[in-house]
Image (cartoon, rainbow, N blue to C red):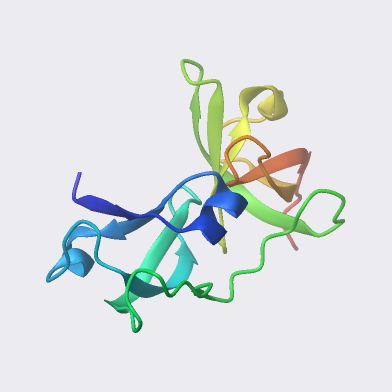
Amino acid sequence: IGLGFVACKDTFSTFGRDVSIERADCAGFGVGDAVSFVLATDPEVGTPKATEVEAADGGADAEEPPEVAEQPVATEGTSERSVGIVKSVSKALGLGKISCGRGTVAVDIAELAGFAVGDTVSFLRVIDPKLGTPKATELEAELPEE
């Protein structure tokens, strides 16, 4: 699939998974090498992604939290709403995807009741407690501006 993974305690505790790294960014590194990186969110799936990967100073024992790229994600209890378009629905997976200005967000199929692909919706963007990835909840129809 053209990906590698970076094990990082800080991001694992937040996202519940290792950080993906593009194959091109792995060039010159081997398994077990200490690296530093800027943390971003993959716009397609909302998972943690390493960018600007460099050899870490201080070796494997030196562990500083990575710099986090500015990509604010609302958490549970936040009243911030986002607007996006329903891009796909998979009954087999029980999930849909909503595309918005901040990337693609997963949504449980039950939340999509009454909506179809192409509909514009507003939603709360929250962190899935099991996966640590962004997801949409509390969908509402968004009327186009006149």
